[in-house]
Image 1 (spheres, one colour):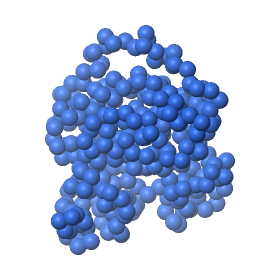
Image 2 (image 1 turned 135 degrees about the vertical axis):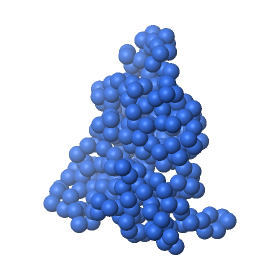
Image 3 (image 1 turned 120 degrees about the vertical axis):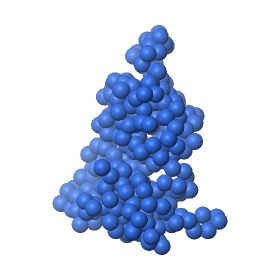
Length: 294
């Protein structure tokens, strides 16, 4: 069941014109709405990508479906700023991403100085999110927040903002080695070999069509135009791209070159060289329409 939004807090920055709101569970969420300037597909992208990342064991913000009731939708502050003027946000099912930490619990930072990365607990997750972003064709910069609780001396990192995965709102998969990565390449730990990208590559490879369909079935049909054929295309593409992730990582390392801390260039991955890819497994690559949300 979707969480019901109960209180308006403030407007957030960003192209989707999200708002900060409280829900019935007492927690605070960044809410992206249907009909936002970037398109409703970004809601699908956010939720689907967050669920996939969680399946891989990557730290992402708790993301869920939230309901905007009629009474709260009447608030004049809940609107989009468009070139044609203000457009009131409509009641219905929208997307909420829970704030990682409240100000009462600790501090959250958008940027962490490189000198503080020695205090980052999960720096190795940057390899995992790089593999993930290449797999799902994230065409935006990778964004994350750094946080620590009041009594803690070390930071943790949580990945946020997945609205431009799957080729963005238009769902066109066009790979670019400069996309789907942290803008500041100094944040990446030293690349010492393919072991840096395990277990992420194994987990991506292990995801099946049933896994993807199960996650997609949780998403409101309104978020993908009630068009299961488009969703089927995304799922089939993701299945096919699993074997290409090492190739995409190698291309990222090649074009970034000396800007990365690397012992050596990554060799062709033995599990995914051309001879090891089974091009005959069409049964798994064909996602059944009957499995997708109607």
